[in-house]
Image (tube, rainbow, N blue to C red):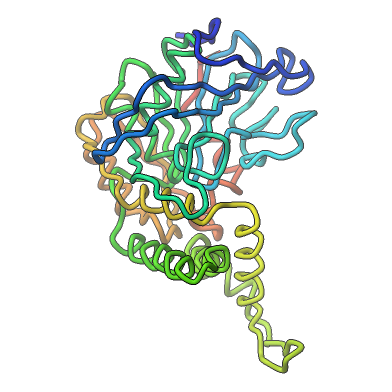
Length: 350
């Protein structure tokens, strides 16, 4: 089946971008305004919910949804007019997920820092489940007139959302491709994230939430990559800074990344979606959509044993295991390894 997009339903006016942006048929993006209240999985509700979306690629190509980690947004790949894309090493013309062969759809997460509805500085925001993200994706498909997706390719948090969607709405997607994600979170990963959230909340009490986010992200960076990579990159001697204090090479790296992150993202959104990861738990035995899972042997956040256990519970699944010094971040970097698996999984679509 080829899933194609049709005219959007009422609710928002999509922006049609320059034809050079996103392949021969151009790109479209817009904001879906969801009417009424949205009841959330954990018991709260939100009104006035907006969902920002973007679709890139040939108009009549099979549609694939691409979803990433909690820092990802709807701008997945680079185009002639859009020079940035969070998955630009894997998604794009001629890459593992080819934007000239497929029409790539993505959206900004509920509760995030982008243009979908999310928390604002200092304000309370309800807990968000991966099921809530899945429901908004369903509403977006209905709005765009998309009856069924060829696939959802989800990495990290996006893989969790994909699994939640497939459990709830199996008739709307033909296949899942899940990278570095499982049906439930590992307690050790939750331990690291709970400390990160506590750092941000503690800093917020002193009105220094952005500095707290910088520290939390620095800690998070130590979990995304592998010990092997850190040993290769950061085994040099410490240097003294202007105050005479020793600074380790790995310390400079972690806090530079933390500082960059804190300039771009809201502390409250980080806390919201970090919690959403740890609240994630779906029933894998009810996911009947054919699923290809990719586990990274060096992944500290989603251990390969957890992915193996999930695949054993899934009714129709296969597992690919890869090795990468990038650890959990392999889904961002390992184009060559992923291209083979993507081609195998999506073969015969277009």
